[in-house]
Image (tube, rainbow, N blue to C red; front, side):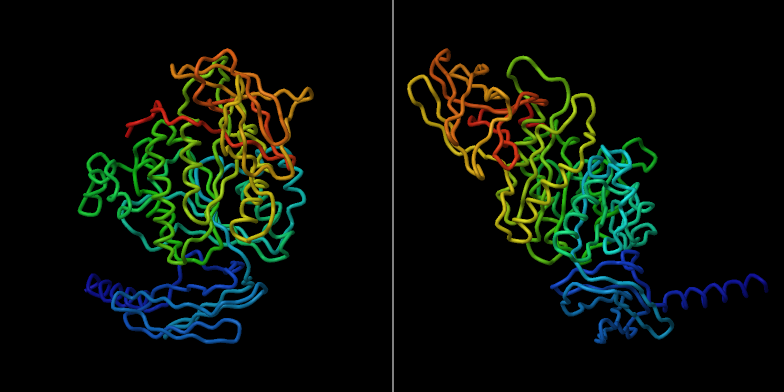
Length: 482
């Protein structure tokens, strides 16, 4: 008898729980909703239940589908707040307080994006004054899944204070602070990252099945257990799709202005492959979000590891090249930090400069401002006797050599034998002249082509560095690696 009573109670309790209107954790008090575009709101309820959402004096109504899912879009709103968002079902009433409308940026990648403010240069000083009630923080906890899940592990939006920001992404905080102060609007930061991860972990089954290097590996993920996949393995967060489904997809389609990305270190041994799978990931995100080609801006890898005396090959240089090639996608930008790394630490502590360069790129790509957002970028070379003249785009107000004597460093030239040698360079207005008198048949230039090119010193006068480049297309050391 007792057993039967327990079963009846269980069934009734389950039914009641299903009938309650529920919302994903990305909706909570203190959240920021994206301004000036339709605002997606979604959740769960009993099958065919009527759901009512009220915001800024307007009421919207929909019904849950046969699976209990519901979604509607609120009308676009200007920046402002605080507001109240109410969600009603037949069994319960959810009220979200202190809701702001502003710009929401997603922060993605691996450990350098994850790196907390407290562990950076002048971090404690920054924390002490980080009292910004109009900046809001949301951090997705680490979670893995090879199949879609409906929600992220429990998390809530918090107001930016010295206590809440200390362990938050330093790059995200500095970016958000600059955006808030310059635009005067609320800013929401969605922190979704995990150290040591590869880009394919952040990409969906559907997208990876279209790539020959991953199609077979992910083909059976949704049909049953995957041989060798064990959550207790040392690095299960490297599995393709595991973080897309475990951390990213559950917050889609929460409205965003754009995405900031700092990742690539773990993909460097397969840099040629990154030429394809990095843009594949960006396009995959845009497709799932369904809000068009939203701005996507990333950090090019910093210099790292011991500097080498002679020019040579580098997987990190090839990864940087793959990142630059991805600028062919619309509404993308890149922050070059080739001189801000540390030889002995993969986590450079100067995150303010990184965030500032990301902000400059965002000012151009996302906000359409006429700003100098990039350092010089290779344009062309021309032979003039024993000299190669190298010209650039994005010189801003002029080329600048960061050296007290004006010596140009970091350039190597090869002849038809494909052997690179350091060459002397001098500035000529906005061009660089390279002395190639000692090189027979010079045909190729490389600049900053190393894991740690610690001698690069070409900038524009706005202080943004020349992007590392090569003029040759000779097969690199990561070609064909999977």
